[in-house]
Image (tube, rainbow, N blue to C red; front, side, top):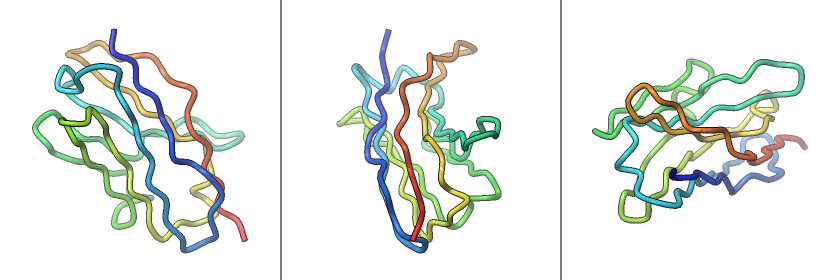
Length: 116
């Protein structure tokens, strides 16, 4: 089973940027889609960005125009570029793949804190 590991989180000021990475232990081409999700304290986990095996992308309204999801199949990595960060973007960010109707397991996530 291909495992996905998140990295790149940290503390950033409002208006700043971060790039998260989701590195796979094997080929990401096996996934029909890869999702970036986040969970803030006391809130449900929500999907913020999706990229399909064909390169199509989709975003939650809350991040549209600020976040960009991309994939590098040669490096077996999916990225989430986050710009114009807001305090409400503070959360633990997770990536997860889907092969057919089967969803992979959640990783440990990476913490993003937006604060001055």
